[in-house]
Length: 342
Image (tube, one colour):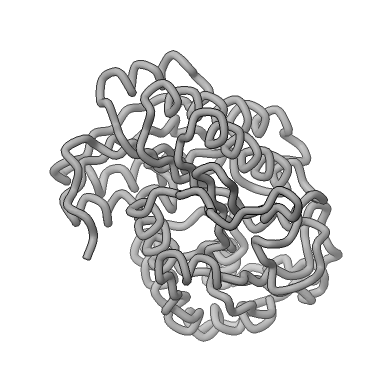
């Protein structure tokens, strides 16, 4: 049973984003008030972001503030006006490949922006900060499933490096100021209202249009695809349980995912990696059309496989994903056909 909604609102950054929309909906449905922040940038279609927000405009308890987390003064005003006690930080410059050609965007949003979030959380002594990390932090690690007990010191993209930096920054604030922080390493999230820069979105678009799809590393890749409803369930469960110090934490043999400060990091994934070829086959099944495949080499910043060990999150909050791609992909295709009228 979730706790009774707080009288103070939840501040949620990235509210016009894919995950942000769905988390906001669930929080509002249970009676929370949510102040959503987004800068509505043009990394991908701003119209899609506006349309996501449009689904929330009539929801009681939702208020939107347009602004950038890299703007410290904007954040300070938001906190002074709304006085949130809990924060869900999902705003970030996303995308592995984009970080290779546009590093400055990641420094501003993911480093400066996250630093600003930590500062306003410190000043307000918030009850809990939950923030999005990424499976990309595992980088050159090859032992699978990826465990939060493993070190993640070899990122292979700037995006991954900024997400690892966020975890380090959060620990510092948890240690110095006792702010409870929880980082969630998302594993390849997909579903309705998803991001157009993601492979499943591009594949569906191309297959329905009868155009070729680009299949990297000649299809020899595996991903732990995680349906949006499962991600949201995990985020909300974590938000309801502020991070606590680990009483068994040992500085002689430090656990990377916890601390003697109120700090935690968890994987959140489907715990079921799928081959890229099988994933494409599931899209073909859902669309009723055959993919035209264009096989290409591995791209810089990519990794061969992702596979989430979710045992720590299951133990902490009872998280258990329930949506296989055979269920999730048809739901996405149905939304795609409806939204784009194809």
